[in-house]
Amino acid sequence: MKWKAKQMWTNKQKDYINKSNKRWNIKVGATGTGKTYVDYKYTIPARTKQFRDKEGINLLIGVTTSTLERNVLQPMRETYGETLVGNIVKGSMTVSLFGETFYVIGAEKENATNKIQGATVKYVYGDEFVDWNENFFKMLTTRLRVQGATADLTGNPKQPSHWAKEFIDKMIEEDMIFYQTSTIYDNPTLPKEFVQSQEIELKGTTEYKRLLLGQWAVSEGGIYPMLRKDHVITNWNDKDQDGNYVNEWRQRASQVNIGVDIGGNKSKTTFNATAIIPNKHNSRLIEAIVTVKDNRFTEERDSTYVEQELLKFIQDLEDEGYHIRSIRVDNAEQLILRGIHKVVRQSGRDTSVKGAIKMAINERIRLYQRLLNLNRYKIVNTCTHTYEAFETALWSNKTDANGLDRRLDDGTTNIDTLDA
Image (cartoon, rainbow, N blue to C red):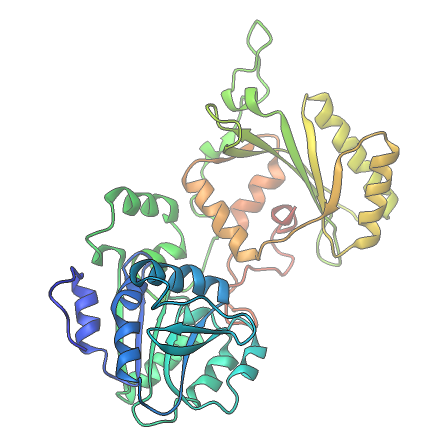
């Protein structure tokens, strides 16, 4: 593969085009460095031509088929047109690329291994491979069994003990890989505003090392080191002589959501009310969120007690002028959820009461890290449980079953409030 001078490539992209001639060719680095760009612009078309008359099949693999469509196929289609870059055929899960058939696979779950058992593969293009299922990847390594079979993979780094890093290190030892790393600063075409916003949003997080500096980094210590005393609002309910709230966000904080996390052996039942602050100029946009009220029980009682305490919590919020937009309850406790729904209805309220739609814990963590860095999440000073929960949250020194970062959850810190 030789670089064509007509296209303006970054130095990293040119290096990959000219040197990616191993069995495994892997780019792992920061976001926004053009890893996928060079692939849909050059690598995939060139490889397709290179392997056109060879034995075996072509694979196009991503975390899901939807991410493949968004990250690879759609931009490639916009570049080359629908004649050369087709649409995914749902029945066969194939796509036509430059006259060749590629089998399209989402590799997030282990059952994806069924889709490549017995296959003889000549070429693989893989998007976000670090997030694939490990057993699927192990199976894939046995499928590239024709002479000259090649894989081009991209991904963002995670912890150094991740299986993908172990595989890369092994392939380096055996001289079977072209491995390229990159930082966000390796792409001079990125707008300065984007780079600066990433620096601000990710400051103090493991993601700063991973997504900006492209490093395989361990999540350790405090989860929210960016939490500061100025994230606490002390004048939330203060009013001027005319009876108007002095805090500008309080003036706009008319709606709240209530989260309910049900306690267990080591955990406590907690309530948390979050105010939604609409944008000053466009009420359909959210400017910030503020924890305005919390409660954490020191002892666990029966479901009737939880229901009655929640009604008091709701009444207190209504007395302070809030409209309860929704109540979301830990949906692992269906009996308690149904009981709460019943008592809320019996109290004459039509507030939505449903089970929580839970994001993955690490996604919730990344969200709050960014909001804190942007100063768009605040805690009212009376919510001492919430501040203490953020202040003491820690990363575990062990990863989860999938090899991902894990929050410490051994009863020594208050994660119940964070879940609420």
